[in-house]
Length: 273
Image (cartoon, rainbow, N blue to C red; front, side):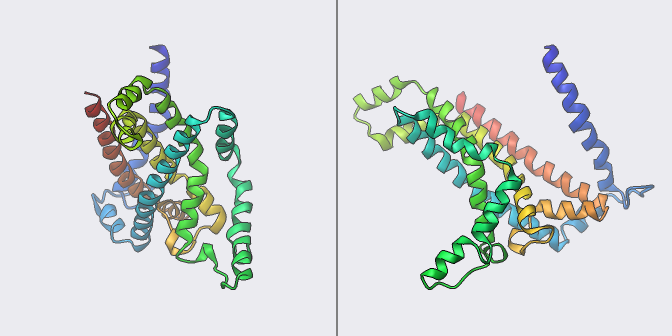
């Protein structure tokens, strides 16, 4: 109980209370001596083209990257789970991206996808014209690739733990009843992995917002509009000292993510009943 109280106190002091204090800027016209303007900042926010562009790109990125990363991680977890020898080695290989600094990996991604990078060198050697990947409409897929590479090891570990907790007798009984691998996957593996899947989904959505660090290091404040994310908008508002718009965008983000997380947790509880 004391540990829970300490954790809750720290969370309240360093997360909840600062958010409540900053949220008041969303209802004023300026940070210092501001006048209450009601929902004016929210209305202006949804008429802001940069914000709508960042919102559209962020939603598109999440809808593509999160399912892909989760599917690949689950596949890797199931494959490694079947390996008898060197399981720890394979697991360690996919965990390497978690311990590699993002700043150092940016040089690798730039060398790979820049105008004169390795990808274009290979393409030009077979007669295909070069593509400036980070400045084209394909840049969003480069970011998806980076996200998958960075997060699949963490998700894989969570899925491996979930797979380990499924009793083997379930598969043995299904095999006796004549169920194949596909039937066992959909009737046993997926239902039993629902708690793990919900956790991985929540963590993946949270981590999808952290991809801004790589995008920023690769392309700066104003990247190609295809990879202009919500975090770019918030970062630019911070540099412009436009705290009302910054906190308004933050409040909208909280109002969207909180019900989504609540729904996922509710769905998990319903499945366990």
